[in-house]
Length: 310
Image (spheres, rainbow, N blue to C red):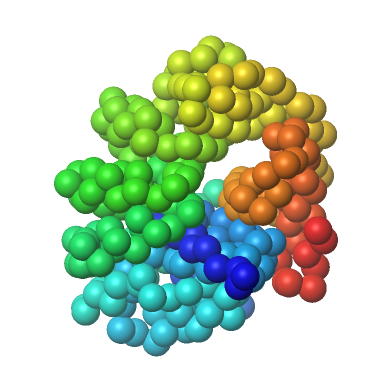
């Protein structure tokens, strides 16, 4: 019997990434690096690399008709991401962000995304076509950033669409300067949690959004009989698997660049979860952490395929 390739969808915004050493910019012209990045794009790449031909991995976003949008589509294809769900938005462009990295590998960001085509990805798509496609999909992944770029009515539409997939995964990715109203963000993220089978969250996020400092207290608030929660907390990852709470020790990694640390973990965990269901959740966490550990040895969100260690 012929195996049927399953579909997965990653929805959000891929942006133009500018990075480099700006120490002498006040004195002279300098050379910077141009790349592409974004939380859902990064996760999709690592998922696709690990899952290989067992799944078609689709990237759902909005792009423009400009040269960099065209190059972005070519990059998607080079990473084996399917582009059928990309919405081309006339007179709009990809967003842009710059990365500054300190000596410890920690990052700070500046964003230019007010005119981003991705903001129109729900508004301009054929919802009936997307709806039918998601119904036949095994996985739908999106994040708080995916929601944050959209108008309120489109946020609700994205959440409703996500529920139609067999498995829905959501990352509580939150930026205070970006999301703004915490009360609205709390309500929005709680709605996404109720619609998701797998939730990813960092300790920084639960403090920023909910003002909670106890990981177990947070998990007890959001766990259900039908969901998995993965919460990263310094040298430990707490988890809830269908109401069973546990934790596993994870050594802090010495990083060259922490860009895509969480994204690479999420994409890897989803790949291991879908292709190796017999593994325990602890094994899936450790295997995903191994990918992240390798990613942090290199600069940039996406490391070369040749550097991937499975």
